[in-house]
Image (cartoon, rainbow, N blue to C red; front, side, top):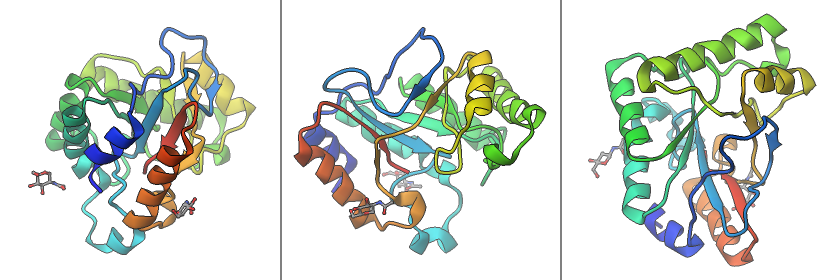
Length: 208
Ligand SMILES: *[C@@H]1O[C@H](CO)[C@@H](O)[C@H](O)[C@H]1NC(C)=O
Ligand SMILES: *[C@@H]1O[C@H](CO)[C@@H](O)[C@H](O)[C@H]1NC(C)=O
């Protein structure tokens, strides 16, 4: 199933949770009829463990996912790392990030290098957030309003308050395609179909 078809099935609304907000933790959308599709690490739900060996890095799909959403009249949310599989300052990555942002998609922070935030000291967490903010300011001229913690969306009150002090809400999810846990493309698609069939009030989906 193409992303465009999934989007039309979902009758997807704009993936904006809330702007100009007081920082907090979102584990679901707040508006009725909003379906937010979110992608971490610049990743794509076509990536599964089976493909991992052939994998050139998740960032390579950013432009294509951006295009699929643009064609479908929707907007995606990308939580980007600065240095994980690739470095955001490489020229191709800069150009892809600018491209997706210019197309109207939402760009959030997934911190600099995808370290386990719960294992870091306060200065290390601040550094991981700062480097990503610096990259988005340098590349896009904007500060992120949302940070998606990792791994597995794990966070604690310290991480939450550090994010809040930097003006960022934590963005979690209420549906998970399981892509990051090794689900196949078909299994991930089944989750999107379940969301579509369930006729929910709204959904905040971790696509990858
Ligand atoms: C992106 O889309 C183009 C055009 O459809 C295709 O040729 C290319 O292989 C795609 N890239 C990736 C990484 O999927
Ligand atoms: C993986 O896919 C299955 C089948 O679509 C789904 O039930 C499950 O929630 C998905 N996620 C994980 C983390 O396994």
